Image (cartoon, rainbow, N blue to C red; front, side, top):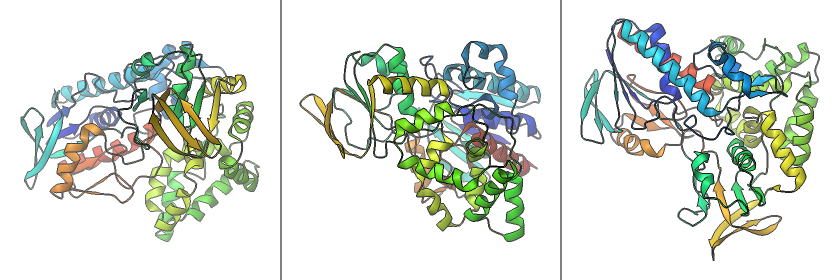
Length: 475
């Protein structure tokens, strides 16, 4: 059994770790990755220490269902990175990249001990076709050919979209990462507009502040919605909003509706003695409430004992991807109408970053502007047109989060080839759907996922399923 893994980021690490635990008789594994930063991918490469992992350790394990795997590795390394409000270590993403690299190397060592042949090819895969009923032929950019029985695409997520056509304009930063590189070119006193108001925008703002930026910073977006804020873990483990409960509903009724999921959440809150209707009203206010007022209230509620947001923040990634695939299309559309609220809740900012954002808002250096319609580059500046009037900026940083299923630039040629020969199809909501059981997709490129970008927990679950499918086919 020859397995080709295209890409060497977090998805590949999860797959290798799962294969090391479940692989049957030995074969060969070839990993293709042109980047020198093996196992880290775009998010977890070398960068500023202010670019933090935005999630508590318990749900950052790349080993499926082993919630302590990352925390155990982190150990004393996390002591210097404790978020006192959260009571959890929140380390720079580059340090999390070291965890991924350690996990990958440990998995490769196990596989080699079990008789697997493993090689790393430092070249980009640009095309692949079926050569026989059981074999794929892969071609790299240097013209070399390789064969494999199973191929797993672990190519990572997309990059920010240039929504306003500013590419090439002096002063426009099309992709902020790594911030260590992009912020060096920004004068400390310049007026900066950051497109977006999600976690990437928060990373930009916090990193600018840490570098002593003195000029005004404005988050400009259509919604103006800031991410929610993580609350201190309370030790609650969901009893109703679980994959097992959703699976049981599916077995009984053959379908799972949004109303079914709402009923599970209602039961979870009722058991804790909490008012479900009041909680929903608070959530729905996300898109209309003043973002500064809401941020202040959420910072004050980090230690609030209520479980509602905690349950949603955990299960959006642990249960959400499974439940999403069972929902009827109209119910998916209902959820999609609350896109900004859902992503704000499911992708919250950590309290240490929220406190920095709040300080900058209170000082007046940072502002949030919603209702942005257009941004133009002209005469050496950028003009931002919005509902609250027009303004100009010296620099524009593109912090728009790429949509789920977006095709990474480096994988464009390969994806085009797969679509052209029918090996895969585009999903209506984005991403790829393999047309062959020996072609697999792990991560954001997997078609049929929800509009919430894959978390580490979701990627680990996907990787475990793909590993099991490969081993089962191996017999």
